[in-house]
Image (cartoon, rainbow, N blue to C red):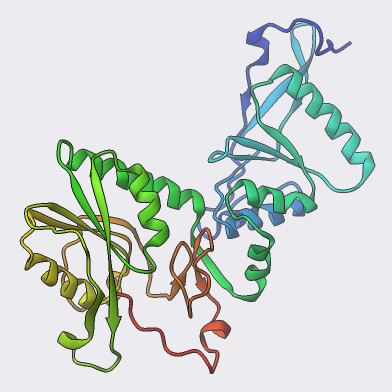
Length: 330
């Protein structure tokens, strides 16, 4: 008879068993590369892929019952989400399936109290999105109405901004900085980056006015200048996205006239396919394709700035007759 979970179980018996890979092909979306046991699992993997939540399918099995020293029963959660250290077991509303899965989960939690594991119904997907940083119900609505493809997830943004902050802190160790942000799309990136920088700094902002159809050298003007004097200071210009390079080239030339000791650029996004002017960029978050993107401070007609990810918009949104053609941000 299988031993009870309440009996003392030696730690060496509770060693998880790594499962063989279910990978059946190496190309295509992640959810199309794996051999799933049930269509609902592939649907859930497609859901995770859409929101760029990393996952592993049935990576490990946990012994939960023994006959003597032999393992009599194991439990293999359907998914593991490494960025959240979370195991997921999927189920349906059928009570005949829910009851045994709940029993196994109780045994698993008693034997492995350090594990973070959840039994997930279809209705729980929204709660998972909240945990993953996608927030309110409006995101679900936007998925159907406006969002084309999520390019950079909240976790990817958080991880990369933290890495940029660490590198900047190392490069400017023992010095102080002036962070100059270019409004308005910089708001979210600037705030998160500043929290990761560990050297002394002050923050100031530029606001630019753009003129469509003008010659390149007259296309941009400073509408709001910085207040802090930068002569003899180390300046880091913080940009949200670099496109043609025309705007950045203009701003750098204006700031250089004020004779800072050094002047470098950090940008969250770089779109090199649209570059017309070569500009120096010391720190780059992500390179993205030649698509119009929104979220994490970036907008379209002043909307979508509060999306926690960076995504493209569906053509039906960009092609609205009343929408003015967006000007390049940089």
